[in-house]
Image: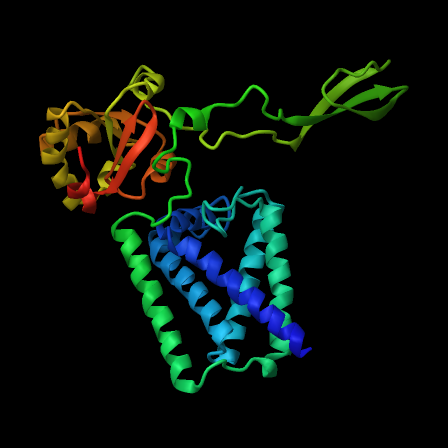
Length: 364
């Protein structure tokens, strides 16, 4: 039992640290995922949506810290029962999401590793078993250092986690796992290769044959049945190849300009997923920065999901000399974790991106 507890201790501790760190690298992204869970389509707890970022930071810091606590043996009883409470909650959440098909990706490992709802649930069940082993063998979890070093390491892990979370919120994620990372080409990320795996669909046809309803399963072809057609149901067995970027677009009121702008050299995008929620200090910086960019030959456009009235208002209030185009809010949030944020493209390739706090560091 002693050895089983130590193996479980290492596995659980390491997994919580890795999972927590990946989400701590992008707490805004995890907060967007929490907003999905809090929405009316899942938990129907919309009153928590305004607090999603605060909850996000708390959860991921706690996750990392608990992983460290477990590995060094700091306050074993508190640590193990806290881990148990967390995993019970997340096991319920992933089961609910998977069973009712509400959220397609749990966000357990941020954008670094996408898991289906059932894969997430399976992962949580395995963790639950390992943590129950820790509960049963609690007496075998001992500190690996003396009291003072253990306490110091525990405190430092908490301080370091808080600092790192604050740092990436004020700048951008230290590691960008998304399809819009620097060096990625948006056009290529949107393209489906000719040799890509096609979706596999299963069709269940219902016919009335000799007065009784019978079902016939095919891969798409119409079954040759001597009977009265009733209906057909389609099930996706394998979704096939799904491009990393699916919903990116740049649209005016009456025209799709995506290809036009993705073919441009030196395109600077000011991303504001929602103009009314943009950081005022960041918006104030845009005038001087975008004028400088245009003077150096850049084409400057804005990208937002806000309406025409808000677009014109922000241009007027801040004397901005560029036009805003329409893009889906979720897509803009994925492109850059800042509102406003800056993205520089060259023929569709992401050359640079920046939080509004770091506009001065961009070399034009």
